[in-house]
Length: 167
Ligand SMILES: CC(C)(COP(=O)(O)OP(=O)(O)OC[C@H]1O[C@@H](n2cnc3c(N)ncnc32)[C@H](O)[C@@H]1OP(=O)(O)O)[C@@H](O)C(=O)NCCC(=O)NCCS
Image (cartoon, rainbow, N blue to C red):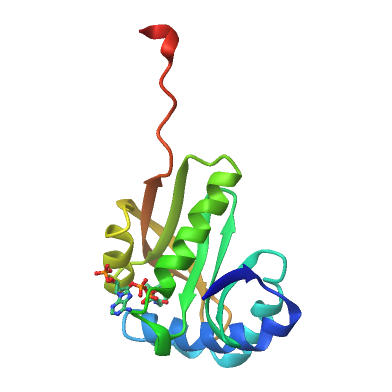
């Protein structure tokens, strides 16, 4: 498996896996009005806008998953359900953390909708700590913003350097 920058040739594949993975994770925990508003076309449009920021996990022409980091946050992390539990998420999250570190972020942040227990377990086991909740506004079927509870996570990527002058 290789994790590399997303290209134009990935757009359709990323859209499909994002759509599948988003529904597998959220259809049972989010209100119907939000879930019904997330048809395949909404992921096709947004997928193209990820070129330049997303990194994609690839194996023999299969697109397995992707992540997006922005500032100090992992803002997207999705693995195609057919490839769950094979270490793809682990590789993608590791790549995302390296990318944040290379931009000198010592404390990384991310969020996921409340009730996404698979993601919660996954993050906890990789050293991320739940630090609170916040409200994320999702778009309903009629275009109205719908407030949804989300969990906030943080991970210390690198300890603050010891100030040797003090000792
Ligand atoms: C959460 C998510 C990213 C995890 O991705 P994943 O590829 O399944 O993650 P991994 O395979 O690296 O790890 C999952 C488990 O599979 C296990 N695993 C890894 N390789 C394995 C293998 N070859 N055989 C069996 N199990 C394996 C891991 O040990 C891990 O278990 P652990 O958490 O107890 O350590 C994925 O489920 C997903 O895309 N969910 C939907 C989107 C989502 O919720 N995103 C995050 C919030 S928006």
